[in-house]
Image 1 (spheres, rainbow, N blue to C red):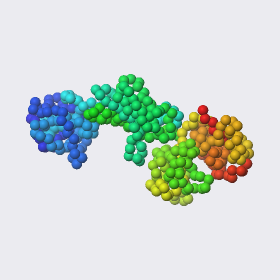
Image 2 (image 1 turned 120 degrees about the horizontal axis):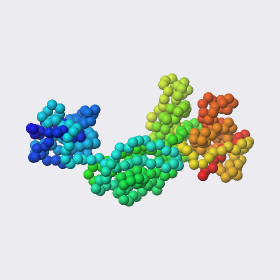
Image 3 (image 1 turned 30 degrees about the vertical axis):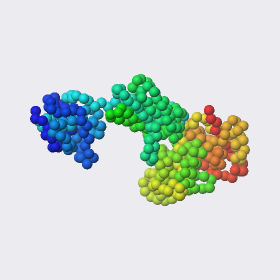
Image 4 (image 1 turned 45 degrees about the horizontal axis):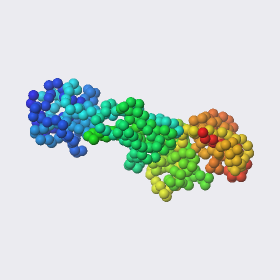
Amino acid sequence: MPPCQAGSPCTIFAPSFSPGCSPSPTERWGTQVRPRPAQHMEHAGRGSGWAVLRATVAVPRAQSLRRVSKGVGRTASRGRIWVGTGQLGPGSPCHCGPLCSAPHPSPHYLLPPIHEVIHSRRGATATLPCVLGASPPSYKVRWSKIEPGELRETPILITNGLHARGYGPLGGRARLRRGHRLDASLVLADVHLEDEGRYRCELINGMEDESVALTLRLEGVVFPYQPSRGRYQFNYFEAKRACEEQDGRLATYGQLYQAWTEGLDWCNAGWLLEGSVRYPVLTARAPCGGPGRPGIRSYGPRDRARDRYDAFCFTSALAGQVFFVPGRLTLSEAHAACRRRGAVVAKVGHLYAAWKFSGLDQCDGGWLADGSVRFPITTPRPRCGGLPDPGVRSFGFPGPQQAAYGTYCYTGT
């Protein structure tokens, strides 16, 4: 078999060489070759179980076949990747295919997750899977949370397989599952609203680092919010604080999109967590952005300190319970009525969560902690809000001395 010629276009094969295609005794193995970004690569042959990448790699003549580590190996295949500086391929003197074996394999230790999106609720315990297929001689596993829009990762936990240490705000609620000796899965207790997002499990073994990324997604409900002063009163930071005061947080674009698919139709624009301003439209109409297709209308990124809009808040399941106290109460009397029952006046987020997750249905307006009057409808019916769809109805912000409503109280566990 003729050796490959140095300096000519090469073909990279995965996972290994075919029978009869072996390096000459003078060829060396194990040197890393990383093509530069400008080099052309083309992926082919996926259906056959092996991949072909074409690139030009300049190597000395004495090293005509070399093992490719990290960059190329990651791109082409999870198997063994080899590079030769000759023209290899079907029909050539040296045909590399899927059946042969080659020395010095470059294993990948982390198994791909079965599910990349993990669903949970506030207050629950969530497990983010990260499992090794084999144990490297020496390694660490580092868990981190990828902060959206901030180009940084917040460390959560680091383990060497024997001992683990937590870091940051999540470290106190995080632990390893340790179902077996190769299990590096992360367990988060008492899931918070701000825990939703992207997480990374990174294996560090000193030679070839690997990682898997997973998404923790909370089941919840998005609700629009504005203060008693009227619409478009919040800058970004005030909107963020307002949602937190109502037992929520600013919604993400993904959460708003899901709420739109579930029926949220709202004409007022509101801040989202990423700093953009949007509003969801199911029925296009003149007062709501004009004619056009339904969707999420966008104002794009805005000045977080200067521009003012409403807020879209997100909340999830409750640990406690919301209940209604009938009567003709002022706002101060509503607070007293809840205190006598060992509870507090419910927040807007409490009422939305009780409607969404507990099916709370009450055709009576009641005071909430922010001074608004609302009521939840699960089964729409005549003379109960007048709208055909389920939702939380609002009477706005009546005068606090107006004795005309009951109240919704919240008691925690």
